[in-house]
Length: 114
Length: 117
Image (cartoon, rainbow over all chains, first blue to last red):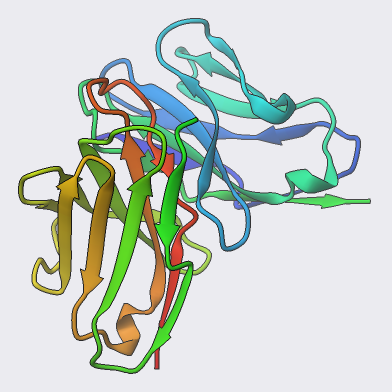
């Protein structure tokens, strides 16, 4: 069965320091992987997606993620956190051939301190 | 591009009333739209897949008669919570995917917070 595990429910960083949000997935075949961000009382905004092209994916707002098949990971990083990055982040898997069904991680709440 | 608009953003109503939530794709056509429910501090749970011109596909455990879905056009899907009760209070989010390209990501609306008194 496919699943997504976000290893940290909360991450707290200081402004200007690097961000690392960890995600591991379980999928039988080559999945598509996404990171979405959700600000309070808002819907989800797509940060980036991996669909079997380059393993290092660059997204919006300076975020990037690296697909590592051997580690079944898709961690999200950013070199320097901004206050505006404080939000909930979801790692999402779309199994191969499963064009409708998205499998969501539990989410990681990122706090950014001055 | 790929903007999804959801309306209303916030609803407060009495127990027993029905509430309709609209989901519109503003700048693209969406044969398929999706309805999710999100409880506080939890992830999204897919409720149903809305298909233009046909019946919605509901996930296991979701009551079809409770959550009515209509997808009458390529840009509009509606979710009606019938005879709402306090346990239906939640954050409802819709998403849409571009027609004709099932490999595209889903684009999400801003959600509707439903509070039943």
